[in-house]
Image (cartoon, rainbow, N blue to C red):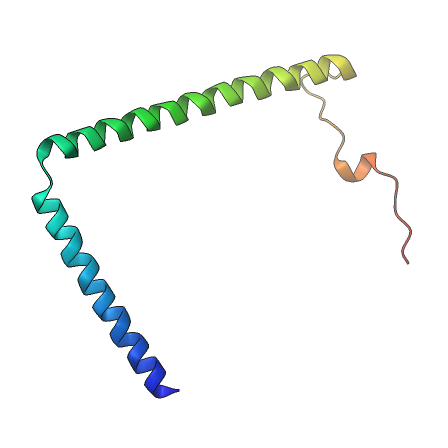
Length: 92
């Protein structure tokens, strides 16, 4: 068991060293244009995700208002909790 732990630790150490050296190598050899392109793409994707989240929030608020209007609830009233709306189950 101790040998497995030792070899696991050695493997993890080697893996970390290889990862760090490979990351540094790629970072140093990557052209500036590629780095800029990756950064711009990341920003576009981030903007798209934020826009989607804003649209989803607006749609949820609109749907909630539709449900409130349908159920005749005012803004101060809350929807019934799930436990209150279901009939109690009998213990078996």
